[in-house]
Image 1 (cartoon, rainbow, N blue to C red):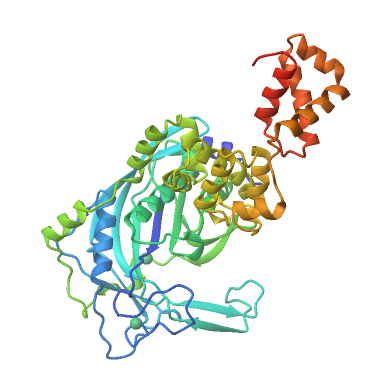
Image 2: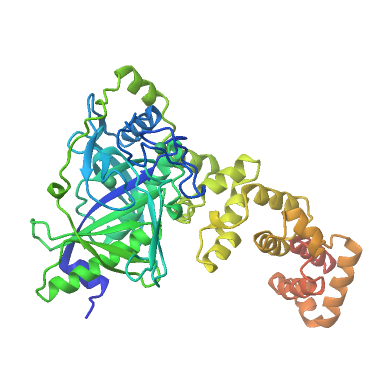
Length: 501
Ligand code: ZN
Ligand code: MN
């Protein structure tokens, strides 16, 4: 019998550990000159080095080191004056060398932290996540298992291998144990990955597309009874590939562990897979210990010893931190905390900022991205940024409204049209034949009709009961099929009935 989440967090103290792999956006691979374009024909971006052919020798990508140092600095790490690569030995068909070139006991960045502001049901809470290390390694190739029902190797008829991804620079960012988050643990995990993603994006070191796997999170979760110091056994949910899934996977694991512990069972140390559709995890392989990998120093690569002047140069060029940018935008736009949190939560801040940069009013830009567009996104279980509507479109929409060519109501239909692929706002307006009735004569005719059908309501307004006007305005809007400007109708109507606003 599964425990309820609030029972879980009243009996147990969760401890997290998060490992994030990020593919760097360098033009060439980590140890060879092969291209890194996503979606290329299989096995067209390969060479003897990344195919692990005997006798080939790796050379380090300088840009990848620069990017990694930038990440380390942005995460408040110290940069090692001297670090080395190591071989992590294991066999898997997508890794042709039979070892992954990684870093082991000498990572390039160590001991940093990341401060988070987490929006919870009890308001905004601050957490600091300590970073253990940031190290460099390379990605593996990709296997495609054909013929089975699940796309996994079990039950497949055969497998195909694509080595285009083999050797793409990866940076792995590992936290220390994250303690003291209590019931907020799933939210903290999500906020951490989100903040990290925003930092990586601001640094320009990766496209951070979780859905394409350029940023993936392994979530380690363990529980211990309240008041206990000793850590419980952890499970590691691998390759979680959306922010929402990070939160769900942590929550699911907390509930699963609690169910086992409560009945006196033992949690197995193993990797797990998270399934978006069921919201549950299933067992993967039992977890290797570090010694199983027979790590040893990579003899084919020289140590990395970045000059202080180079590190200073990278530090000097670090962009504004996302948290500082948020504060700056919030004050520039004079947005209340709650609205700001709503934008951050819906992940539309960049979209609003881009719309404002194009010249739109911040309040209006925010209104559309958080309103109609977010609504449609939710309905389709998508993020607003995934919908085919751009800041340029939204700016155009706002301009049309400002010019009196669209009412809010029509504008909402235009948003829908743009998202349906009917073209830009102007094109949708033309194609759907939207035309705001701004002609006073036409509006006055509609107002007269409304007054004739509802004479008693009109009398109320004449006698000074202004709220009654709503029914008449509604009738006019209906009469003009929503193509009238409601504010204008209101003012004409009130004036006509001898009232001022
Ligand atoms: Zn290559
Ligand atoms: Mn790794």
